[in-house]
Amino acid sequence: MRQEMRLSPLMEQAQVLEMPENDFLRLVKEVEQSPLFRRLFERERVVRRERLPGTDVSRRLFETEAMAAADTGSFDAESLLSARQDLAGLARKVGPDNFKRYFLYPEPDLSVEEIADACGLTVEEVRRINSLVDDFSVAAEFYHPSALGDRVVRYSRVAAIERGPGGFIIGYYSPGHARGRYTIDYEKLARLKEAGAFTVAEVRDLGDLLRKLELINRRRDTLFRVLEMIIARQNLYLETGDPKALLPFTQREAARITGLAPSSISRCLTGRSVDTPWGEKALRDFFPRPRRFRRELVARLIAGEEKPLSDELMRRLRDNFGVTISRRAVASLRKELKIPNSWKRRRVGGGV
Image (cartoon, rainbow, N blue to C red; front, side, top):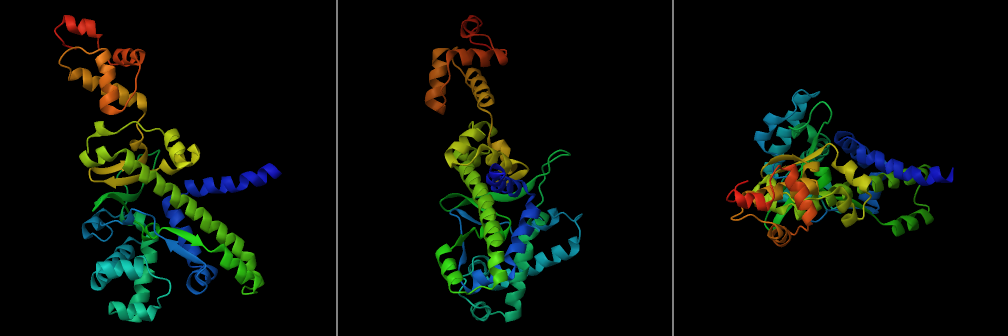
């Protein structure tokens, strides 16, 4: 029984990590629209949002061209497209800087009236934009459907890796993701509880709400850290678009770097994709197996050799690409490629 109690939070975390993107976004909306969350966020300031570094909303968020790619076979497609057009029009009226400042990443201390005055809007327009942003966050998958997938795997396109002033950034398609993680002031919450600020029903609901906030944080943190690693590790591919520039990267290595469980990495990669400057790519494709990478590298080096390489091949692999490989491994890979050894290649004048 004790073991089941210890495993229960892990099982719940796994379920949230595996949850389809649209179901997860609906969970977030449900949590943020609850009266208790609104009280903790708007009045008590116990819960706040914290943007993750190197992230933003995607520049493609309100592109009219992307509307043509929307999943018009989904339910209520006409109203969703109409809502997007309304939101895009209001965003242009407010201006991109004010839209981000007051609606995507708002300061919790600002009232609706203050936002309306700062943006030259009516209070009703402010409320409408807030409502549209919430709806847009949930429907992000409708507006940016994946072009990948088959009968076995259905992909969710969660973000775009875009060029920024200082390098690549993560541009989320859901404003909810772009707002980042929740920070919870547990000390202030404890003081409020001791002062009797909450009803018996609110105290009973607090544990469930905080648990959901932490689970949402864990999923967002995991996705962010995986995308951050991809940008760091596969930067050359992102710069050039050359598939051969993808470096070997295992899920076990990613788990070691992040401190996350390998199972969490695997769940995060499953069924998710991102846009790159070179098109949409499944997250798993950024993790090529080392043996495949080495095999392709051996083939490229032998194809471009001026004279047959043996020990020199291993040196170049190590020095030029940061890859260590034994003589036996080179021979094994070469046999897989059906390439003769250096002595035989030398006899035929360096041909393969």
